[in-house]
Image (cartoon, rainbow over all chains, first blue to last red; front, side, top):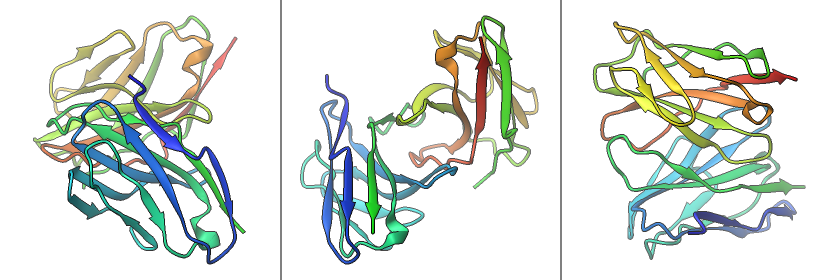
Length: 113
Length: 110
């Protein structure tokens, strides 16, 4: 299994540009989520999904959109990038068990100029 | 959500045991105690979790106080590869969301 994969690894955007961060998992996990991590901080939840067709907001959803058309993929869209969105973005997935572990991807480092 | 308190940083010698503390005085009866760690430039990885009883796995042990208001992650023999930020997280029953604090940065001294 490849686990949780994220693309791209690095991205530089100009203010106002849009882009999509890709996340895929091959473990048939129902639950997927996106976090952002700013320097020296812990991770903060942006959006999550408990299954295909179901998404919900996390702690910091503003400026981001998600959709979940398949179990495997959970893309994160930045509608109009802002410097405040400069961060490292992590995708995670799990079976959705009551106390199961979550698997994290390697991250995407995004810089918005 | 109940919060956790961890020291900002700790140091330990290589091949020595490491005890990483976590206080969670407002824990509720259905909160699971999870530990994740984040190696430099990587995503977090699961270490261990428990509810009431002490737990062991191949990576670590988790000691949970009888009143559940604190817990300790134990690395039995630290290696340089264990240098990471360790996060203690309370996860409510049935809730997949993880709320990360700033964790404890563990430095291993060769």
